Length: 290
Ligand code: HEC
Ligand code: HEC
Image (tube, rainbow, N blue to C red; front, side, top):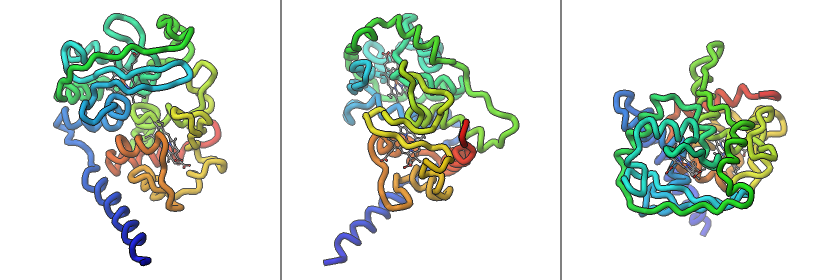
């Protein structure tokens, strides 16, 4: 009788630990499409742009926010309803400036604030990977922003306050691992987007970065990741942090859930051990004011 639950826990653990170990490695540096796929996972694009498994990347996910309901667009290479007709310049402007081909600005619910930290080479590899995806014909659903956010030019104002648009600048006084971690956490990994509190305009409070967010994307409380006593991650070993990012299990045997569950499935569970270590290394260096 007792063997049942113990066995299923064992099977679960084996399944969870074996799977990521097999897939997680660095992509072949000479293969731009493989590099692009890796960056696609790092950016968690599928989390938002795949609403239905049978329509990968065709969008349609309804995102309910305090600013209204937004629907993710089709980013497959379909030429009429997706982004198959986009030039490299169009893609770079969208990802790093939040600017659409018609010159209008995207709502920051598309986390281009984070993607603007990505290098041009990384963005081009990401596009090469997206170009290899199956084109799917599916029209975008119009957003339903609430008043006054239905006025797109208002985004220009938001950008003035909240968007710096500068690519990531490595700190020459820090190690390569630290800089890699900083790039992922503040850039494509989007950790900063959820784990930092937001000000009343919906922008990230820069003086409280990674200190936790009482009102996360699914209305849940997002724990802080800085190494201060109020954040439990500060008591975890490097292995504990690595393990939680790989399979979502915390040192006390709980599983991380909510929006982090999706992040583990689409992003951190697919990153190389080297990158997870870089993230951990960077987080270790975040204290009171960082
Ligand atoms: C948190 C959800 C979210 C994530 C993660 C996300 N996006 Fe989006 N994306 C959106 C939303 C919402 C829009 C629509 C914004 C608007 O219309 O103002 C959008 C718009 C876009 C557009 C513009 C499409 C068009 O037709 O104009 C592109 C391109 C895009 N995203 C690519 C990506 C890529 C590549 C990734 C991963 C690196 C990614 N997105 C990750 C939510 C997301
Ligand atoms: C979409 C929002 C979102 C993103 C993006 C995100 N997180 Fe999380 N994270 C959460 C939420 C919500 C929790 C709490 C989950 C729970 O308690 O079940 C969490 C929990 C964690 C925890 C456990 C901390 C604790 O005290 O329990 C760690 C570690 C973590 N995230 C690291 C990261 C890293 C590293 C990244 C970037 C690669 C990241 N997160 C990106 C939402 C997010």
